[in-house]
Structure formats: C-alpha cells, structure tokens
Image (cartoon, rainbow, N blue to C red; front, side, top):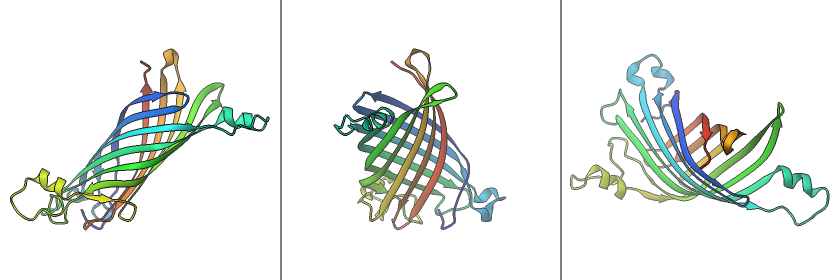
Amino acid sequence: MSPLRYRGLNFSAQGGYYKESDRVLQHLETYFYYGEVSPNVYKFDINGIAQHLRGDLNYTYLRRLHASASTGPESQPSEKRYRWWVGGTWSTLATYRYHYLYSNNAYNWDVLTNLNLTAQVDRPLRFLRRDFHLAWRAFVPVVGWAARPYFTSSVGEGFLGEDKSHLSAALASGKVVSLNRFFRLNSQWSLTYPIAGGNALRLTYVWDYYTYASQQPVAVAGHALLFSTLFRF
C-alpha cells in the first residue's frame, strides 16, 4: 500500500478439525480476519483507512518425541508432565486490502503457501482445583510459493499485456521462495478446559509475523485472541 506502518483492530474467527492420539496429532485449521487499519498520519481521516481481509488454512501433522529409555526416578515427572512433538505444517494465507485514498493502488493483496517445520510442547495444568491442558506450538517456513502485485497494479508481477486475465496473471507471476525472500513465524498458546461428554473449552492466543521481499515488499504482524468450543465426535 505505502511505506507507512498501518495498524488497527480486526475481528477474528476460527474453525478446525482435530484428531489426536498418544503418538500423532493432526490439525486442520482455518482462520478469518476482517477489520480496518490506518497509519498515524491519517488517524482522523477516513481516506487514510484501509480495509483488511485475510484467510488462513493450515494442516499440521506432528509425531510425539518419546522420552529417554531411562527408568530412574528423575525421568518420571518430566514424562508425566511434558510432551514434545515435531512435524510439519502446510500453511496457506491470502490477504486482501482496499485503500480508500489511492486510485492507482487501491487494491492490494498477497497469497502465500508454504511448507513449515513445526514443534509443540504441552502439559497438564492444575489451577483453582480444576484440570487444564496448556500447549505451545510454533512453525517457521522451509520453502513455499508467493504472489504479490506491483506498486501500480492490482495484478501480479509479470502482467504486462492484455492477453491474460487477472487470475491467470496472478498465478503466472507467483514465485518459489525460501528464507532468503520470505520468513514467517507463527506462535500459538492454548489453554484447554475439559467439560462433560469429552468436549472442551479453549482459549488461544496467536502471534503471527511474516515478511516477503518482493518488488513491493510487505511485513505484517498481528495478535489474535480466540475462544472456541471443541466437540468430540
């Protein structure tokens, strides 16, 4: 949009499917964000506001790391309290922004899909005579594909003629990227409270940051606080 730093409040929503066993975790998660952002220089001017719309789709596969084969008394508490997991996440995010002030660059977007290394640690937690489950998970990219438009066009890089549609131009302009051009860190803390019937309530805090060094570079960071209900089928 511009070299200015934009910030603002967004509405967040989450949905997902979770399949868990003692050795394997599989999570399919979707996130939706909508709101408005603006720079301080246009703080009281509606023309400086940009609409922000984003959707994420993540599939995570993790396997549990077993504790040492040692059976001494020092190994037992750690095995009972902490579980460590490693694996991968296939993540896709699509962001759309509309800026009220600009005429030649009002529409701005980026699409990023990546294969990531993922780690998780969790443990049971006893608080106020109630049992909870605390978990932390994070992933960083290894390789992926990214598309983002030029400064003066709403279509992707490489769109020069009139012989392609916006969609085909965007797909053709995508690039394979790795850590030299793209970096992302996604960190999640979740606190789960079991309820009747094998269901649960969950409070999740998400911090997400990504940067992409394209012709129109972008750096985005955000916080999200989500409350969800887990139903057992």
